[in-house]
Amino acid sequence: MHKLFNKISVKQQVKLLKLLETSTLSFKKGTVMLSAIKENIIGVILEGYAQIVRTDYNGNRTIIEELEEEMIFGSTISSLSSDECELIAKEDTKVLIIDYDLIIESENNTYSYYNQFVKNLLQITTDIIDEKNERIEILTKKTIRDKLLEYFNIYRKKHGSNNIYLPFSLTDLADYLAVDRSAMSRELRYLKEEGFIETKGRKITLLYG
Amino acid sequence: MHKLFNKISVKQQVKLLKLLETSTLSFKKGTVMLSAIKENIIGVILEGYAQIVRTDYNGNRTIIEELEEEMIFGSTISSLSSDECELIAKEDTKVLIIDYDLIIESENNTYSYYNQFVKNLLQITTDIIDEKNERIEILTKKTIRDKLLEYFNIYRKKHGSNNIYLPFSLTDLADYLAVDRSAMSRELRYLKEEGFIETKGRKITLLYG
DNA sequence: AATGTTTTGTTGCAATTGCAACATTTTTAA
DNA sequence: TTAAAAATGTTGCAATTGCAACAAAACATT
Image 1 (cartoon, chains in turn cyan, orange, brown, blue):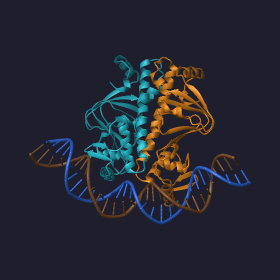
Image 2 (image 1 turned 180 degrees about the vertical axis):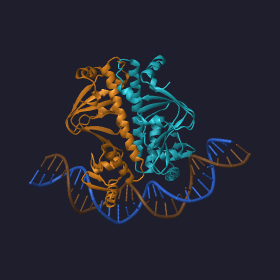
Image 3 (image 1 turned 30 degrees about the vertical axis):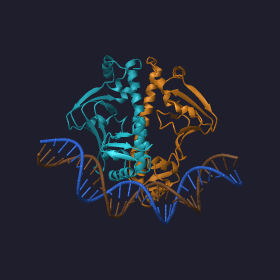
Image 4 (image 1 turned 30 degrees about the horizontal axis):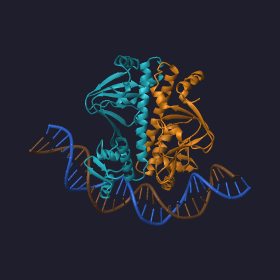
């Protein structure tokens, strides 16, 4: 069950979804779900797998977000500057769509499940702020080395281990750090040569305090 | 009246503050309000002016946030990695402290003013996410020039004007963009020389489409 | 198992940037 | 008003980085 429905019974969930006039949409693999993100909505991936892809003025396409089952997306929540972004179903995908304005404008302050839902959403948004702050913390470092080390430190603090298992490819890591991939590759080599880290595939071991 | 109390009558506000066990603290100019930000709280500046300052391992102090009257702060909301951060009253300052955990854990889902408060807080957090996304958008640009132009474009889109009035000093802008101040100064000169912008103090005029 | 695709590693080189140091102007506070 | 502090502008230079191009490895798909 999704965090969004924490402390809300199944019966109440049904009522809630009706109250918020939600809809469930299904998309075939490969479909572009344009309209879905044009408006001010919150989406939950119920089944399948989708990506948010940006195409910039040069025609370069970047994957902004990978949306797996259970994940949440929406202009309120992610960086969907709706102009350039597309939501694309990479598999057959089922999405729950909730109108954000309706959540906020609804005057149904007496339904306890509705209020719980708003609270759950608040929890999720504050978690997202934490993540954004982490990324900003990393991006404000001036050198690639410092960005890497900051990324490592945050990971270590979170997981309590010197072993880092990258949740994505090194190419994606370079995107996340907003640095050139080959330059990052070079910096990782230096860190290895200087004995700060060891790497094996996507596993990185920190050898420093 | 603060956004946080939007659609909540003064009478209800009083009840709400009691319900959430808030406290109002006063600090003399120059005081370090350490404890205030150590815990999971939301603070509102009722009067005065304060700063959140980080001191890193090198002893370098950076102003992370400038908190004027009406402004809100807290670990849930800003980037207060509480270890290195201090909240400092720059003038005599009065602060409203709200325990975030109490907001979330309270089961008072029947008080409409409480629910409205949670909703207001949700609005504020989503706005903050937008701001963070903007900054990330800027920070992921690779050159100083592109960072500046992205900053300008976001400003122009928001204010609908080619005149930019910087809300802070150029030194602070360099911090915000996470670039060296003198290098930014140089880049601004190039932009002027190439006819893209004009500047006068903290006013920048965009001369391009 | 064979093929095509994506990821990774590497390197030379040019462009960008940070740093340090200093002069000048503006702002702040006594 | 005046002195001190902060912000701004400038420049040379070294360090870091992005870019391009390529080879090799890993992965995915039929």
